[in-house]
Image 1 (cartoon, rainbow, N blue to C red):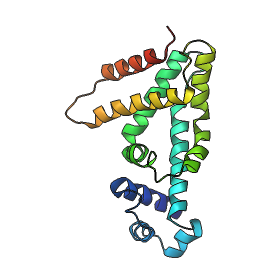
Image 2: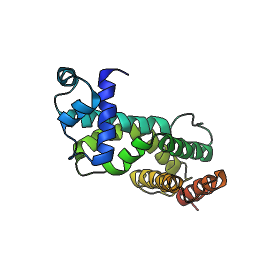
Image 3: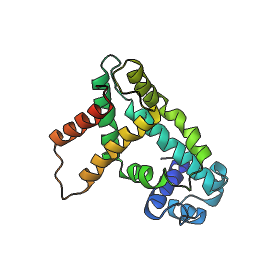
Image 4: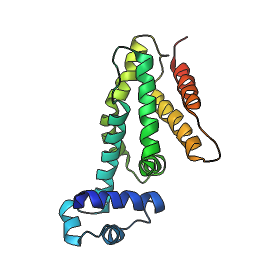
Length: 185
């Protein structure tokens, strides 16, 4: 892992444990083991590190969700999108915590959130196409994206709660419930 990646990973670990405000640049430098000069070579300040981290993870989410989705079967595409995001969050718990606690934080400026929307364009297109093809109810595509995302997040939380044994059939039920919520009657 290169030094820039180490700084980003360390920042992710620190802010998911203690939040943005409680994470200082000096702590990032110390915990990463990267020299001051090297950090400042890549980033001007903590905000620049957070910006890059936010954009990087947002791009990951958008890319992962749309991976290996067939274009000719909207239900199968939806299921694969759902499973892609579920497995990404289960296998990347820091990214999950980041998306839940940090990405939605008021400490992330709206201008950065707006810039990151570009990475969700394929997801937005999926919902717009579903509306245009009259498969989905004519809801606001951004609301649909958030509900889709929220459904996955809810099941990830159940999965993370070790008191509940989540089986494949439960995941498939969740996908079906989510799918039916978007369908035009």
